[in-house]
Image 1 (cartoon, rainbow, N blue to C red):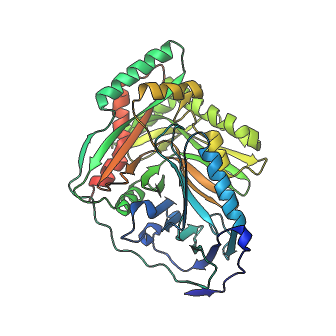
Image 2: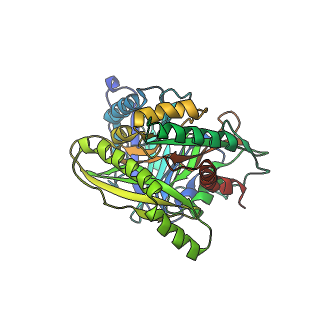
Image 3: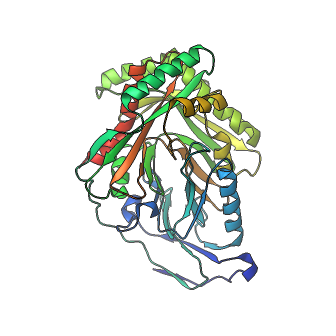
Length: 431
């Protein structure tokens, strides 16, 4: 247990006090094990990959915004908060000190709100170092106690699946229409999504989903923000002391479970003109969006094949050096939507999504992640995910999408979307 003296309080003109303490702790349990039971699902936060990252709980401060200005308004709110915060940070790593978690709707006209959440408590881990952060709204003596490990969450009960707003047949029809529009020259690529509704007989504990996803998909970023839960393989952008990175995925093939066959499939994916074309569009859109903020950039000439338990993707890791003070959220806003989740040309592809998809994606395929007071942070694309119903936590809507190009086949795209729903389906039904 560590006791820290209270820092000097900010002046009354600075607004409400925001007092932040970060101390190193000796803890080696999995990060997700610290998430406590009994909290509302929208107060459980996560950004974890291969045992490192951040988890948080409680909601010391929250912010919501909607419309075209959602990123700008969120950035302004965070800037004002960091200016008036009183922070004592004994760790000084990316993710220590004052941190927010966030998620943003894909579309500016979505009924969903953008969310930023500052947890009351955060446990972070990086390079083997673990720390504890607490956030208080009043300047006072703070006693920091090492966090306790929570009990095992209960699995969802009696889960049943039903078509959402877009059935498989509806999706196949939308894909066929998109291929016709591509042939007519309206767009080069458009990403279409579908949904699936899962209902249990009791409230779904997001901690169960997070643990199952982390166990089975260690090469993904396992996230939870305001009831949006998932495991994304795609890093939209990370900013870490001037280094900017992005992992771009586009081009997918389903795994068979047979290692020899999967190796052959991986080779065919790497040679597929349809998938290479789709991937090129996505990489180009990321490089063009980052360029104004970078002094140099490395874009590999050819993608590699990323192997996940359910699918394989063509992947490219873009690395760049920052040329300005743009925060990780500013960079995420500049990148969204990339061709990987929107299409090419982006503006027309997004219009076509609204015309053909017939559903509100909500925060699916929008940026999700975290940011610290220095602007460093990591934002993924909210893929392989589900949104818990805010009024009925026994229900969760799952989403999956596919990039449609000239060579796309409707039945194959339905099968690909099924494969992309597997992580969340399995997390809900596994024991």
